[in-house]
Image (cartoon, rainbow, N blue to C red; front, side):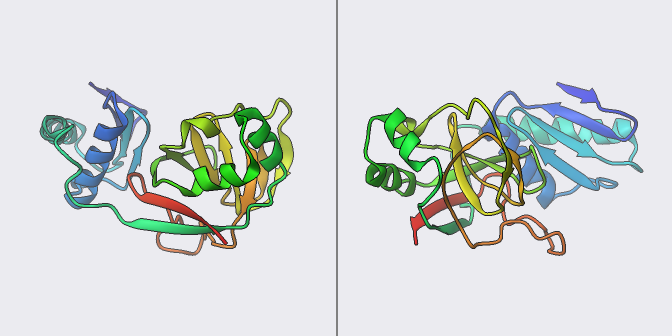
Length: 205
């Protein structure tokens, strides 16, 4: 289903993260006329096109979404790039995550570095990527009382996700460590290191 989102945008309801990723990649590869921004989410893709003919754009989005929906489950196609993030595992919540998981801090690090994650979508703050595929053992609740400030580069977990704080901000995720890798640069093109669908692996520094 495609809904109108304000005067200049359309919202495609995909129903799945995989289709959101496929549609995002397809629209970036064959960007329709007038489209200035594409914002994928867990089950939606927002397409912003201030100067476009909305009827023509809607028809084009329906066509591309139908094609990509037929490919869901058939493989990801072109392999997404892999970003490796070095982490110093000395976070304030490393011990509590280990305690909640019933494992040692060394095993927390082993499990956090032991599998590839995938950028699901960006939200909460510019450049803040929700990384999916976290080891289920490391799934822990957010802090009951969020911190008023979390340093940029903090590597954290909450629920089924991991993340790297792109800038200093309030936050309630549990901190495992920190990275010196800059994941958000407002002067960069693009400013975010992450894109939906990108593969991410953490490694102990």
